[in-house]
Image (tube, rainbow, N blue to C red; front, side):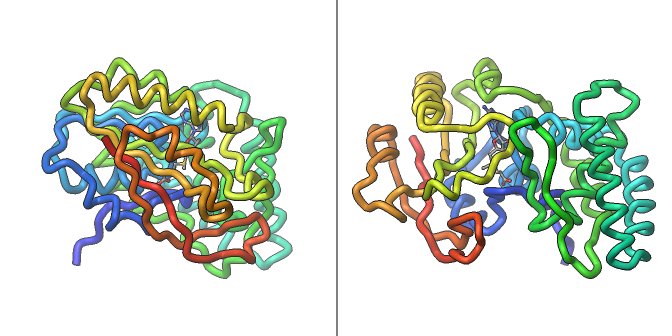
Length: 293
Ligand SMILES: C[S@@+](CC[C@H](N)C(=O)[O-])C[C@H]1O[C@@H](n2cnc3c(N)ncnc32)[C@H](O)[C@@H]1O
């Protein structure tokens, strides 16, 4: 069986497990596609594999993630070469030595983070994938100062360089416009022919679950309300819109936040397996929301 392209990083809120349900909500034909909060791109790659879109725009506020998409798009062979070297170095080392390599790569990644020099972009992307594949839980998390601070994970033989998948991803990204910034910058692209999949940072199910920080800036209830207004504005343009979020009723059955915010839309509750709190001991089947116009 030919394997299809899939996300090249593990990403908090990744949609691979929900793909079968989300797929049912795609329009019959997708000519233009826009994903303003692309993250790991599980839905993006599924759509690129199955539809011949004329125009595609993806966006995310995370600079390092978007740089990695751009490097895969334009320099995939150089990226694979570097990543294979990192993989070789890491896999042949024992645990104390691996910790040293991980910590050096993490320091280097953080030192390059605020350095916009074009010549470092490929190295930044290589470090980004390396850290994602070797860190604890494969999560991207930064502290308030924007420093990536996830410790090393305990994988015995992590696949750091999946060249076959990276090449497939690169091929699919060839005609995709890749943009870094706030989701509102996608507004002009969206028209009546566009399918827009919106997967913003989740509204935390519990206060402690808000540990997941994709960027230095959080995404609070005020932001969710502003996003609701953005959704209204693109629906006025007659775009086809699908939105995901966590269902606050998982923890408080009286919490109607999204039922009120999206009262003019169809709201469906679907089951998903995910981690509810930061300690990871509260994994279970929970409801997620799929909202459509
Ligand atoms: C739930 S994740 C998306 C997960 C993705 N669908 C997947 O399958 O991996 C949310 C994404 O929104 C991004 N983000 C947060 N605030 C944003 C903003 N204001 N504009 C655009 N993207 C933002 C985060 O960096 C993160 O990648």
